[in-house]
Length: 229
Image 1 (cartoon, rainbow, N blue to C red):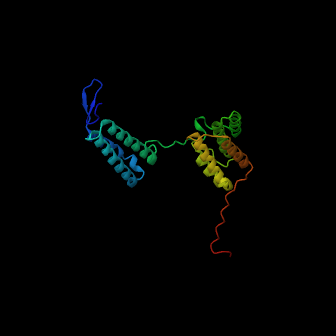
Image 2: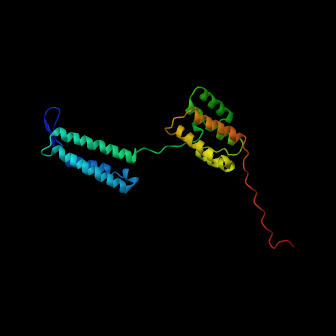
Image 3: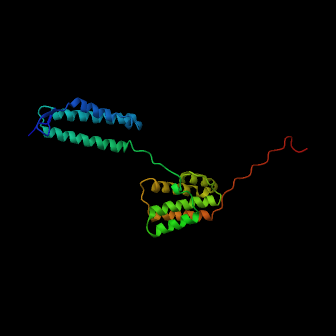
């Protein structure tokens, strides 16, 4: 049985020297990457030190006396799994880009609220719930624009529309915010839509059609200097 240590056998049988210190240093450099340390430096330092100590021990075991190559390799693989599990549990995917939230209408630009509602109903009838949710949210926002409760503004996101509409429809502000989050999670995130998500948006759209906006009170007239003559 070949011995795993500082020397490995290449495919042709020639010995290949694998220095341990550079491998250990490379692992430590990766773990000290600033991308990982943007979250919580104190906690990450403890994790990094713990992993480094165990990795160093495993690398020493691979080439140390009294430990055969198979045992050393098993120890190294265990530590490698622990490294991956610890980093994923603590950081998730550190280089993952943030979700991009776009114009609520997408690239096609706005259409009429009735057109969006018809498309949403068609998708719902076919069980395409993600498409139904997207079109129903667009119908809701477009309806508010058609009623001049929102100004028609290119580039507005669902969150922005919900926040602005919530000021003129305060009793539905929370429902509007929840609808926008649902739309974003389904349109740009990883959430799977279902019939319940579509029905909530559909019912909110119908409710808002029957709701009168709260108009801003007119400012009180300024007092006349000196009072009445």
